[in-house]
Every structure is written in C-alpha cells, then in structure tokens.
Image (cartoon, rainbow, N blue to C red; front, side):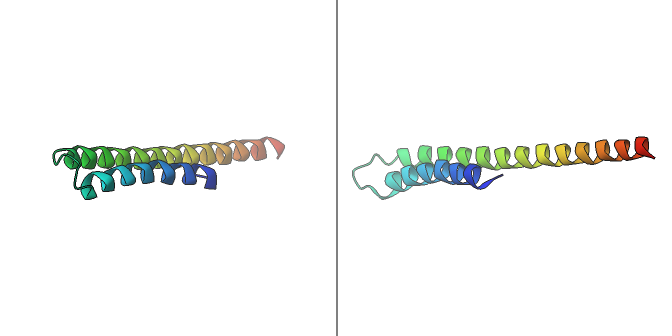
Length: 78
C-alpha cells in the first residue's frame, strides 16, 4: 500500500469511528443505534484489513512473477 492508499483507508475508518462515537456519546441518540454503529465499524475494519491483505498478496505474487521472469531471461542470455 502506498501513502495515498493508506491515507484513504485511514480516512474511511475514521469516518466510521466518528459515527460510532457520535452514537455512543450523544445523549439524545436512540440507544439501539450504538450497537448497529458498532457492527458497521467492525465491518469497515474487516473490509479495510481484507483490502490491505489482498493488496499485499497481489504485490507478493507480482514480485514473484517478476523474479521468475528475470530468472528465465538470464537463462536465455547464457
């Protein structure tokens, strides 16, 4: 993940954290909403972690493919 992707991910999560805190701290808010907000926050955290994991897997596969391709070219040069 580059810095821009990381910043976007953090911003998405902070929006959910803000919403959750609003639900928890606002006295006028209906009390059944904080649980729903907590579930949404948890889902957002899971989504961002899965996105980061998928990005890492793709980067690893791409790096492995580049290394394998480089090894093949070296064999042809010899």
